Length: 509
Image (tube, rainbow, N blue to C red; front, side, top):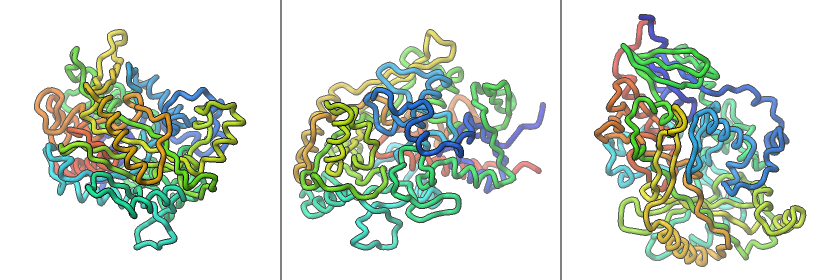
């Protein structure tokens, strides 16, 4: 038998994959990362190409999805994933990435941390995640929005937009007595101070177009550091297509290559990982349970800010919010508030009952007073399953939906939120909508840690049915709170990799 190519093969270069790689190479383990993408073309794109697209993709008919999913870079990533990964949707938008850096190319970059209540049913405790949270935060760089006129307490900050700052001041002046609604400055994975290889945010509003300054965290940045290690090797354009086990594990790629290692770490994203495991799991007629976060989008108007100009800021979340709607541990929603003036104009002009020229003029007149709130429910309010596609040899179809009675709960939430908007001096405009399942891209629960049976994994993400095959992406999160989960996915991958690094001594060099 030929010698293995590495001690560990990591499939995927997204946030989970790089978070698993750092502890392993620090412990002297040989790591081979297989990536379906590359960095070709990144340097040659000018701003007009990034904003309009090489084929003017940004001028296509609005499909009703989030503005961040309609940019040229997003369209290219999502269309390639749906084409090459063989995953279709039925009442569900399958979102994944085969690009260098995975979904960190198009993520919202908002940071949330789970608390003890959020993981009460997990096979790990919060203490086991805490040091990993801290390591990841230090590595990626995070900043909190702040009203710079009030001074800062030493924490890295970026300036609020004027309308967001106005709303937060209203909230602090008249908080709800029961504390059920919270509004706070958003924390984002974006730099307010430059780092080697990454500039600070320049407030140009290019956040949705690839952030050419590198201020927004993208796991591609980490690959530059990883490649400096003699224990790390990255192979471009190697899309993994199958996994087989003999004495160890072998990964076959779309170009006909194969690579072997005693242990494989899957970090391909929930849908990408499911596609790789199609032939290794008994996905029957019922399908593989998939948790995702039902999402509401709500347009808001601040009359106090009408006809006032916008202020320079970034396009990421300005404010974070949470609202409890029940007594259960997970009975709360979270969300973010964005300033519309910092988002792509065309996404809003296309939805106005006016011609393009008149719509743009009207939008520019009121943009400084407009906000958009995105609200996320916990995953237990979703009902989505991954099925094998009977018409394709290895294809998958995701069928999406909501739990019974969810629409009624969603309407009740809108009513509760209207009371909060009124208290904040905001008017909820017509057009609040429930997004198609999948749009949120908050996926989890397909291969939960601590669950017995063929779809379960250990607390270290090792598949019950397949020793030596580990998963570190969102697939293994046992449940899905309404909080943003990328930070937790990265921290959990870091935690698992530290444990795996201690399994055995480094191979002889």
